[in-house]
Image 1 (cartoon, rainbow, N blue to C red):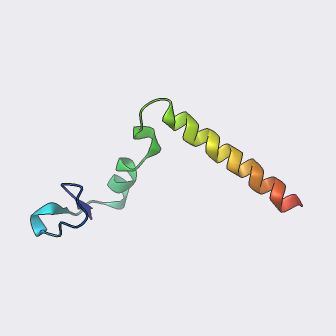
Image 2 (tube, one colour):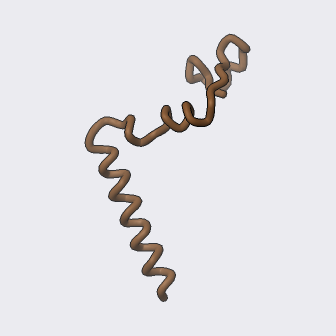
Length: 58
């Protein structure tokens, strides 16, 4: 469920919209961000994975 006016305190039935999980995932995808943010998000994930692998080896 999402809020049509983006106000999470407005619980009026006309302001609520039921959407599927797939649609919610598409709306919240990092790929919708302006350039170069998607690339930065990917690089951050790669860096976190490397850090986690190193900390597990110790």
